[in-house]
Image (cartoon, rainbow, N blue to C red):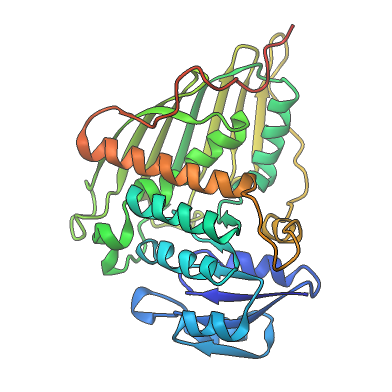
Length: 353
């Protein structure tokens, strides 16, 4: 059995613990720390009471002491963005692999320092970006890999959320990090999944607060325009404008147009449609929902040994870096080069013969 701890209780930690709970006793949460109700966190008693924590799970307000005491195999870091990097670094320094809320950091300097810390510790990091395992997107990815659209040439994504209740720190850049890193990183992950890892080479962006003037520091509309390393183009819109109504909180969408076909995926609605030459539009059959975090934990090397970065670790840092570059582009009103040389990556899949 692998033992873990929960550091913080704000964000998407319930999704992670729910999945680990369903794994049939392979994982246990042995302690909870750094729970701050003023940040909007769930109180420790409710965390322990709502999930299968170990009998006598330790509850602490000192993450470092909890890590020293329990020496867990992994840590689930789920805190507001401005606290993530420090907690990930703390867990890594204790020799823990980390499942982390995103973005991993709220500045490029902080991200660079964290990447050095993780590499020095010899641990791996998995960001809470499991959408590629959602059935509709998984079906779309499988179709792309089978050559259904040919080479992905133009990609478009949408992330729209209800405003709901926002804690005051959402208006503080140091605490929140901005809407592009918080929400836009999901759109970047859609593109990464659809292209098989085609990185962003250049990005231009705009962001503003146009509807929720009571919190001017929180951007509620964002637009990103990108050139990927293969030369493909991508755009994303992000907003907090979804009406407060009985519809779901969000509505995620991805379109991939290639030189052979066109794919449209509604992740939240659970629908994927494909158009190919000479054929009518067809709806793709969807696979069963697959776990994301448990397989990653199972694939970790035995405890005590160093682990080289895996795909999930490299992706977590790269997508965070791309999101921060996009925020920089919006702040500065200019096109930002990410350092990835255009033309240096092969498009996926390779051209058909």
